Amino acid sequence: MIEKEVWEPGRIGDRLKMQAIRSRRPLSCALELTYRCNFRCRMCYVRMTDAQAAPYGRLRTVEEWLDMAHQLLEAGVLYLTLTGGECTMYPDFERLYEELCRMGFQIGLMSNAGAYTDSVRDVFRRFPPMSVSVTLYGGSNETYRNVTGDPHGLDKVLDNIRFLQSLGVPVKLSFTMVRQNVLDYPEVARLCTELGLTYSLITDVTPHRMGPALSDALQCRLSPAQRALVACSKPREIAEALSEAPALERELEHFPLPSAPEGPLPRVPDACIASLTSCAICWNGDMQTCVSLNAFHRVKPFEIGFEAAWTQLMADHSTTFLRPAACQVCPMAGDCLHNCPGRRFEGTGSPHEPDPYTCQYTFLLRLCQNRRSKADVPFSPPCT
Ligand code: SF4
Ligand code: SF4
Image (cartoon, rainbow, N blue to C red):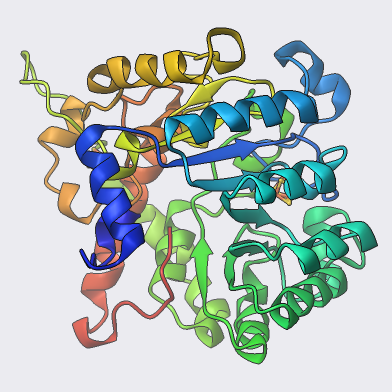
């Protein structure tokens, strides 16, 4: 979130961002190359089989992506994030990646780091990525087997993280927590320390974006009470903390979900700064402001050209990025984390409706924090 960074006008990257914001021009773009993945995580919001993906379109070819990349360059985009699925599983990833590097883009990857072939390693050696954000799914091979389906998953991931570190590539770690791996928290924390890396927690799991039946996300994800307890606990306290979850969950009986007031309210914008300078293009060619908003008013850059697609996104901006009426009057709004239009769209199918899962979590998190000494909160690393 660039809003939280300290900006320095003397730094060239920050000057570029400021200029892009002022002129509402694209500076960053996420390319979601594929829905395919080496892992089969139970709670995944994007992975599909080829048969499941077929009704939604096809993967774009390397030539199509390179043509799009030239249009991005022309439009002023400097930063690319390659993601998926697992982006390195994209057919001919190495050629596409090398060409994009040669074009001068600053390229970051979002990856599970579980499937780097010799040729992927070779291209990373020659063109090290600007950074790699790696998501962890457990602290043992057994947990990886249970969550991702790969019985050697953790060994592969640790080996590839160490490989990236040997190249001097900055690696950012996060741990996606679900019911099947939450008790691995102490071991994951230990592994991150051993690697010399900080990490963040992801407890906010949303349904598969093409329909909840395509994953077990809703069955696997932590309950709002479990999430609140994780956010208020140190790794070694996790088992004991979670034993409080049933009692905490019962507090929801006294919590009416926030609702919109009677009568019309003024339209209040609810846009992040990134929405003025960033976009994301999905594996099938649909474009939106971010991957979370994918499928909301599909914009088609491969059909109308990138510049026209960007113009369309900016024209839609004031109607896409609106605060729900319930959030406008909600007394918990100041404490409500991860309640942006993209997150709401992932949870409810509309960027303009609050997700009850978020509301319940926010309510219980406040309760949990108030019960603990202020000096001790937060216990956990950054948690969304
Ligand atoms: S590693 Fe990521 S993209 Fe792959 S299945 Fe798991 S959650 Fe989905
Ligand atoms: S999403 Fe957050 S701000 Fe909106 S109604 Fe729920 S708790 Fe309140």
